[in-house]
Image (cartoon, rainbow, N blue to C red; front, side, top):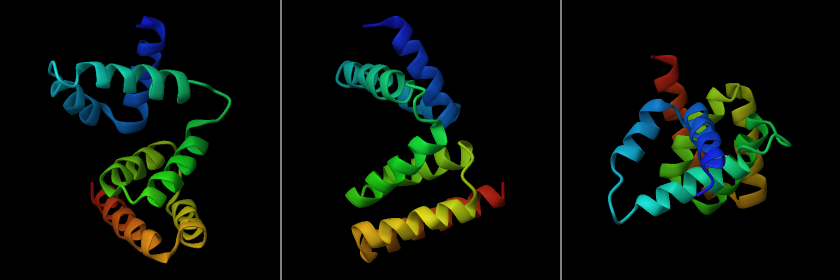
Length: 126
C-alpha cells in the first residue's frame, strides 16, 4: 500500500462523499472487504480523484454521466450529493441529467431525475 496515496484518497473521499458516508463504509470493514475498501480509497480516490488535472466538480459531472448510464442508482444518489458538495448548482445538475437523456436514453435519465429530485429536496430541507 502507498500510504501517501491512501491518505490523499481518504481526504478526497471524505471531501466528496462526506464524513458520515465514509465512516459508515469503513466501519463495515471486515476480513472479506478490507482489501477492496483499501483499493477504492487508494486507487479510485487517491490516484484518480487525487489527480488535480480535473477539478472535483468536473469529475462529479463525468461520474454522474457514467453511473447514470450504468443505471447504478444507489451510487448515483451518493454522487449527486458529492456533486452538490463539489459546487454543482441545481441548474447545472439538471443540464447534466438532460445530457444523460440524450446520450444514454430517456429511461436512464428519468431514473436519474427521480434520484436527483429526492436529494435536492433533502438538501433543501436540511
